Length: 342
Image 1: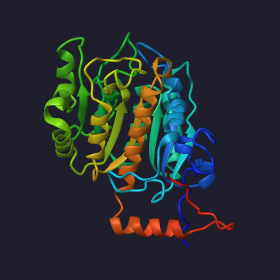
Image 2: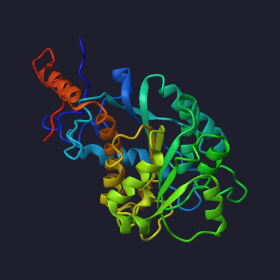
Image 3: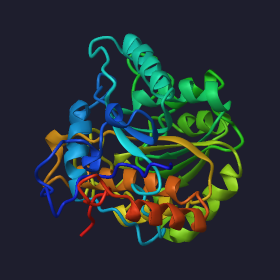
């Protein structure tokens, strides 16, 4: 018998401000055993170069996700009903040693892939992308990187340190984790240290879409550039929340004026339907600088878009059949097995 996925708690039974502090009030990975998609927090921010606080990002994003609902009308999917999504908790790592933390994150993500098909990680700072890419490289080979950020993150070192939140993709390229014919930055803006930053980045095979080009080309134009660049390559999506303008994401460590709107980011993500996305992260949410959870809410919706993209991969007929079975399935007491969705 095909057991329907366990969905988030029914908000008509348990109000959204109550219940567990898992992402979208989903079951934990321990409760379901296996998952198609899991959300894992990585509360690490020892790699930041300016304002700290992203270590508190995972719990803030989880709390901000309580208002997410079960049906995505833009993609016509029920992401929690057509696949098992679970919260895998946090990958704990050393806050005093960046090198040791990277090893621990790599080991923790590799262990999760034993019971999870796809992992979406919530940072933490952008240093965490390097060990996550290492893990996926073992499973899929070199990856196309779709990188949303105000910054290139391809510096060589910072104060002599090779591993920081500004260097993960240079290290990833050096280690052969990325495809140099299929990777792209989106939302880049702001001053640089030197023109050599752009020269180095081009040498690693990245294409750049600036925030100004997002404005000029619109969502459809940027989606087309991403799809053309990535093609059929296995892709990793990495979202630094500072890709958004500080008006939409004040709670981050290195804000830059002139960024994307939250609507633009969600629209571009939605346009990536059909790409072979094998993993993702959303990083750099720093709650001490957030106001009214603006940044955490934006991050939670970005994760929801990614989860919905995964659900949209199944043929429409299969999705509707799965929905029918989920609706017909009942608990022993006769209550619906799935959560409500007002």
